[in-house]
Amino acid sequence: MGKTITEKILADHAGEREVEPGQIIEARVDIALGNDITAPIAINEFKKAGCAKVFDREKVVLVPDHFVPNKDIPSANQAKLLREFAREQRLTHYYELGDMGIEHVLLPEKGIVLPGDLVIGADSHTCTYGALGAFSTGIGSTDLAAAMISGETWLKVPETIKFVYTGKLNKWVEGKDLILFTIGDIGVDGALYKTMEFTGDVIDKLPMSGRFTMANMAIEAGGKSGIIVPDRITEEYVKDRAERDYRLYFSDKDATYCDIIEYDVSEIEPQIAFPHLPENVRGISETGNIPIDQVVIGSCTNGRLEDLRRAANVLKGKKVAPYTRLIIIPGTQWIYRQSMKEGLFDIFLDARAAISTPTCGPCLGGHMGVLAKGEKAVATTNRNFVGRMGDPESEVYLANPSIAAASAVLGRIGSPEEL
Image 1 (cartoon, rainbow, N blue to C red):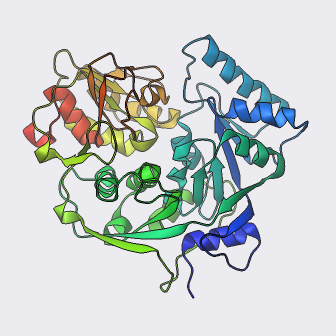
Image 2: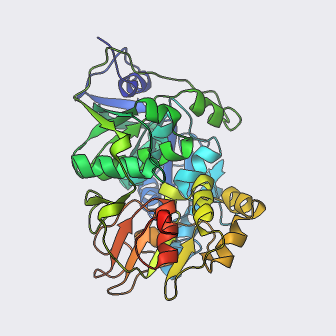
């Protein structure tokens, strides 16, 4: 009987010939990740256990990105704890302000996570790395502490749903729209504790930026992970970045899936997730007239260079609507610098946008764009729960960068076609 890519990766990391869905395994990890919100708890537990050293200083990665630059004294203390632990442990991969980026954009860019890896992170969007053909999933801070000590974690092998995307993408439709449409179809618990394996002719042509976006939001459907079998596009991305050897895994043609769901993408238009769930999705033609106060383009979902290029393409020669705020947040310092080199910042500034240093910031209602009571925002982020970006009576609408940019100019949710 054939095996899925997920089952093969987990079997090898558990030292087993093969594994089955539902099986509990202990597996070695290639990367254990924490940030300035989740890692402090793990560090405290690590110290309570009386441990002197992490299992491997090259495999424990700490990235302060959620409340950095520090917004207040508590966040400064959180970041300080990471800094001191990284110095004490001589961690290879600790990224300080000015060098760091949003963790799930930074690690692939640096070649730290690679195809075939088993990656755990104390952040739910660790599933992003499945775009590279890795098994990656979010864990709790205490599980991170255990992994920092032992180099291992425990998992229940998930079942896999195969999603097949065929047809031709319509104009302004990208990976963000595919995953929003999928979540709208199956619901926020439609892939509960399952691997979402994205396949089909459309995925074969999708750039890495779109693949990262899709894998990133697998958790919004309840998924344990999202994954895409590596191919030429994957190898082109990692070949000059990889800092170590890696292995490519593939799903067998006769692999067993708990479900196979097919979509004809020619029927999909740009998608908007209405408050207050990512599954509350409508096509752009069905949104109606919704005035907005703020637009955020960035995050681990859509803060990559390709995302900023698409936004700049829409914004060029235009101005943000009166009484509407546009915040641009590049995902990493490299993306920040490259955006400057390509003249994207000139376009953003001419449009009256504000540009931030890399940070998670407003995505979690942290800083750099918190919403007031009654305000509405369009964001390229991944969640729109009640109070996610600020006041519980504010509203967040999720969209791709092109739609977000057009909405900033229109002062309401709208399409580039209207410009």
